[in-house]
Amino acid sequence: MNDIISKIKSLAIKKTNIMEVCGTHTMAIASSGIKSLLPKNINLISGPGCPVCVTPAGIIDSAIELAKNKYIVATFGDMLKVPGSISSLEKEKSSGCDIRILYSAGDSIKIAKNNPKKEVVFVGVGFETTSPTIAATVKFADKEKIKNFSVIPAFKLIPPALKIILEQKKIKIDALILPGHVSAIIGARPYGFISNKFKTPAVITGFEPSDILEGIFLILKQIKSNKPEIEIQYKRAVKPQGNPFAVKLLYSVFEETDSQWRGIGIIKNSGLKFTKKYENYDALKKFKIKLKYIKEPAGCLCGKVLTGIAKPQQCGYFGKNCTPLNPIGPCMVSSEGTCAAYYKYGF
Ligand code: SF4
Image (cartoon, rainbow, N blue to C red; front, side, top):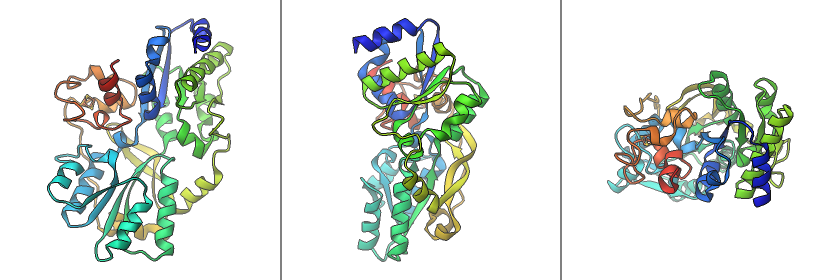
């Protein structure tokens, strides 16, 4: 560890803003105390890679509406506490709504089979890491002719969000630590625009502290040589071509669509909708739900935190009115949220 830190120090000759895109990296950096080991001129900035944080409040409101209509709503635990416009799935669960917490999307099929007279709606949240497994679940439901199962499609794609952040230039980003899990699916190629168009170094990095430090070292080497590229540090999990089987599976059920990111706005081709063949499994179509656009609570800086423009402590609510027990914005409640990381581990 000391060796890699010395190497980083020898290359850190100017102020360098490095965005760690993924919420899992944000948590790993905060919990391991990496920031305290780095030279002061290396500034780590958190990015938009927390799927729960970027899921619009309208999705949560729609899931609550369905649960109040006596449907079974199935979700990963991370979504429970996230505030919608007036309530959360957790509050509605404690008021008697049938909301189930799942460890895998496949469990929602078991619930649907065990409750043939009830509709089971899965809240489909996640990035490219999650969506192939949901695609597999939908295909399985189709094969088994399970009709009482559907998905609220709220999936997001990482590269279009990075493109917007780099295009808008609201903050100077010198380099990117790219997500390990998403990249295990999509590989390195979809990030090509980062080094080609924006001339920005980027390294796909693993999640151990030693991985992250090596990722930072590789970034500094690229900056020194002035040869930006998409490099893979996390070679034990990521191949340049990604996982073509998973990508094919994903696009056999879903196709790209413009998508609303909470606190950020609509990003072109950054979400997934069902293809015609599987649209019977689209809960929004099935139950004729029109997603409402809901503004973030006044003063909540989640949108700015998610794009690196603000640090959590710049939000007036941070640690006062907004805590993990009483969250105002999603970034405080997700296990990958930047505000949650800063609250738990300090900054
Ligand atoms: S502290 Fe709370 S209100 Fe402020 S940005 Fe973070 S989550 Fe949003």
